[in-house]
Length: 293
Image 1 (tube, helix red, strand yellow):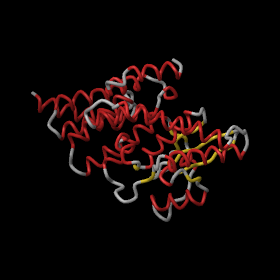
Image 2 (spheres, rainbow, N blue to C red; image 1 turned 90 degrees about the vertical axis):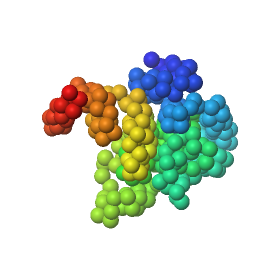
Image 3 (cartoon, rainbow, N blue to C red; image 1 turned 120 degrees about the vertical axis):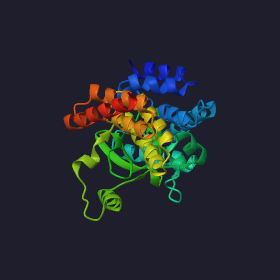
Image 4 (cartoon, one colour; image 1 turned 90 degrees about the horizontal axis):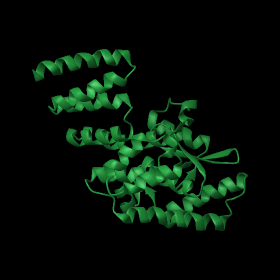
């Protein structure tokens, strides 16, 4: 399936966010249109379809990107072209559309819902990163998420060179010293940069990371019903991700939904290759069976 075919499939399901996410679950990672999938996650969280205004907003970002990229001459295959592309992203998203990181109410659940991020023009690093990725790819530019701990960033490529940008800080480029400071702020003064901190993150994992922020906060607040719903959304887009079934089963068991818990745990056993967890889950399923009998 080509990117255009995948996009058409997702667009055809815009009225039904569950159908969009189910379609995402069947796509290759490179075929996922990340902003549209993020809007579907947000719509399911709010139990509604995605209003057309949000798709129009993404189109407006695309148009501003095209205009600004032409003004700044981003076509050069050199360091200047890369710098101009980074400047364009910041100028459009942080400048024209006023997107910024929410430093005041960082843990607000709205910061992990892409529709509310668009409404409020602020959010978590990973939510803002989705918009930066969408904006760059609308121009055919190479960009990816970066597996940086505690503070999501993106990496923009051009002509064999790359810049790491911080969407939470208006798309500012990050030096190695900047990243070291961010790491120590997130993981402690003894933490040091490691190669894995620069690893690329695929579209599916970015969406999971976005939704995981929501799930963690809901669990901390004791709202297991909504946390279970978040896991359901995560499983729609990552139906082969075994650990999610285990977590879903444990939460459903805590909620007293024993049949749902057993179904999730049995699915975990079917697809997981973690022997130690498989043994533990098998015992949990036995315990659940005794409670159901």
